Length: 158
Image (cartoon, rainbow, N blue to C red; front, side, top):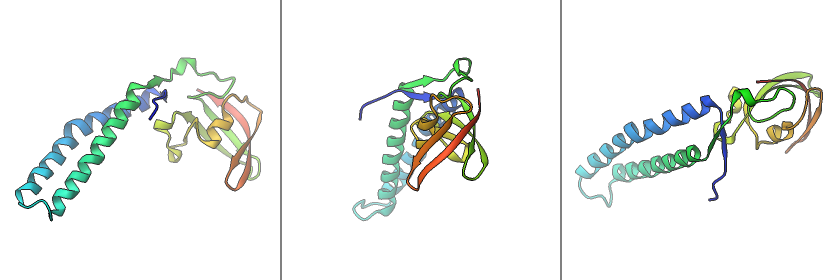
């Protein structure tokens, strides 16, 4: 897999560093202990506890490797460099859905810390990529599976 820049806010960087530390120091130990206990049951050929623990270990190591890759390629989004003239990564954008006359606020973040439930959308998502480079007052068309959504940009903040 080709490594590419991963854009993170200071908050996102801290959250991922804490998760990585937790996985390496606490979770690894817990999984190793479960494997040790499962081995104590004897024959591993029909030992479901051992199989589950080994699968959990594989998932844990995969997540650790992914987090290490993200952090190795992290580009910190500096709040001071976020423009309020045009939408960029790190911008908070208030948009008005022109069909439903409904206002929503999004923060454009890198894909590693996107969380739509918190209003954090990826710069690579349909809405995020459509908003990038636009200005207050612009009408943005977002192509989604159900058709086209039109947003008017109400404001851009840090």
